[in-house]
Image 1 (cartoon, protein in one colour):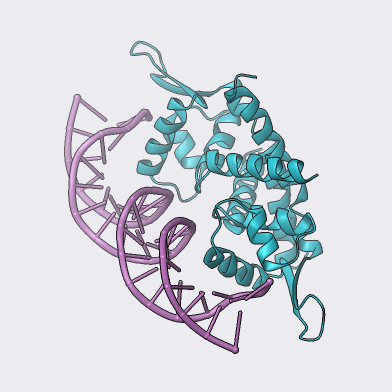
Image 2 (spheres, helix red, strand yellow; image 1 turned 90 degrees about the vertical axis):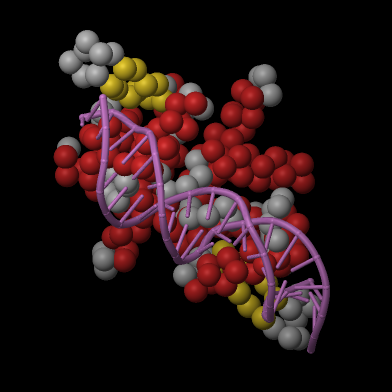
Length: 110
Length: 110
DNA sequence: CAGGATCCTGTAGGATACTG
DNA sequence: CAGTATCCTACAGGATCCTG
């Protein structure tokens, strides 16, 4: 139980580290929702700037959270896809969305 | 589906806002795990400083995430408790711990 | 034990304009 | 459309020491 708890804090902190910042989760969510073009993702996330999106996407590509493909001859030249690794955040995101909705209900006065 | 997705991003962003930073989640977790004294909480969270813990605790008390009670005559003079509101983060935390554990398994090479 | 006071710094993130 | 390039700043967070 002692040991166990230490392990859990560490796991929690690891996750927080990977998901750090305001944007990674919304981006993951957006891509998993089927948005796969830059502007599309951008428009789907209120408040994000092209600069932040650009940076995060690169970062996430490096960490194999997403896959970027550029094909000069394709109709859609650049596209982003989520990897399986990325999808492993699904449950976390779902819980957070759930929480956010309930929370808003409370604030808005039910 | 359009409408719906907008609502979900917003919910997600709300949650991220509330839980922002490195420490809130670990603190909530610690308190929910039964730690209720300042130093106890502090020791249970690797890397946190007294300054950050102090700040976050105040903040979380203001936002009714935790309850602080000080009683000069009690054996334990100050103690922190989690509110029901606080406990509503349980599922998120569980999922994050789960993810963190799996992740470490992967990194450590299974 | 439960914090407060100070000092300091990096960097996450914003604003805006520009390019092929 | 898919980004880059600059410039800028607040503030999260660290380090350290102090107090009742």
